[in-house]
Length: 91
Image 1 (cartoon, one colour):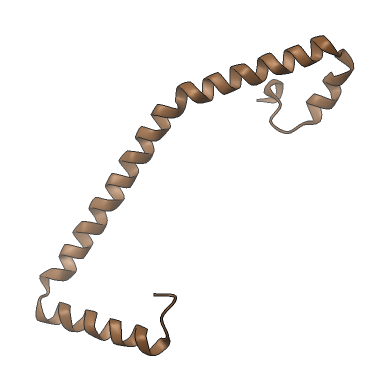
Image 2 (cartoon, helix red, strand yellow; image 1 turned 90 degrees about the vertical axis):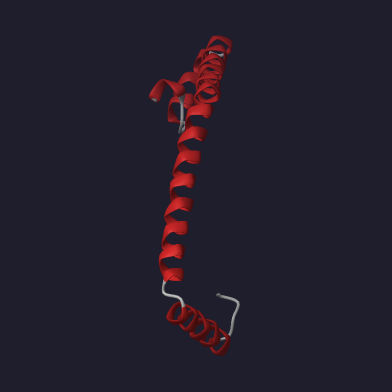
């Protein structure tokens, strides 16, 4: 509705209010649909988090391996890596 003019928003709201006045069950249908959408989004988010766990672990292991290999290649880089945000040693 952000793209609508004030007049258009008022017209849409008036039509919305008339529709609910004509059929009050529409209000509850919208509330029920919104709740169902929110629950579906929550379930999808939880499923995504669970599905991403192996990838997150693999990334952490790879970053730690890279960190350790860089220090082995040049020990003087360790203090620099320690300053870096997200350094595996600081997690």
